[in-house]
Image 1 (tube, helix red, strand yellow):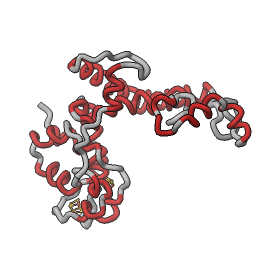
Image 2 (cartoon, helix red, strand yellow):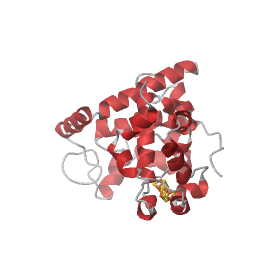
Image 3 (cartoon, protein in one colour):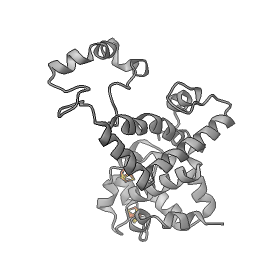
Image 4 (cartoon, protein in one colour):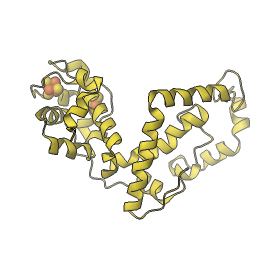
Length: 236
Ligand code: SF4
Ligand code: SF4
């Protein structure tokens, strides 16, 4: 059986990110995520470095690896040239590749991100597109948000944007040939396979939880569960 540590080691980011940790804790001192969350990059480096397979698996299934904000402040300070932020990137990737991400609340949110931001990129060329934002999902915006959506062409014209039209300008329509190019990049670089794995493991989890799961879109029980679930036990 392939060891998890060896899987991590195959990734160039891991090779670059972990030389030899001496457990000094400077990364934790500078890390903004550890200020708020139950999160400590020093402990993560120490754990991974121990090569303890059981503990690495536990880490891959935990909320812990999803707390990092990827700010890379740790990269600038480590006296050993380690980059905990890069190690976290690889841990996340392996967690997604092996399906461990569905075992934690924060990990399961990968499905929501894929269905929203991930698909937005492929379908519109934007991470977040106003056409897809549903006022029902953003009650914090108040009634103005619905009004804005109902009057979007008029409002964006007055602001000098080029909403939904070809040519330059904010909110412009991305031509179909450019979208096809984006999809091609995803196919060639493995991005599409990666998305498919998130779908596959999330579907299995939905089945375990006896929740409805649609092949597309966000109007299904599992999506809302993932999107809204908050055990509120993440902060220090
Ligand atoms: S700063 Fe570097 S050496 Fe110190 S605990 Fe963090 S990763 Fe290890
Ligand atoms: S990249 Fe992650 S681990 Fe490093 S300082 Fe930023 S939040 Fe902390």
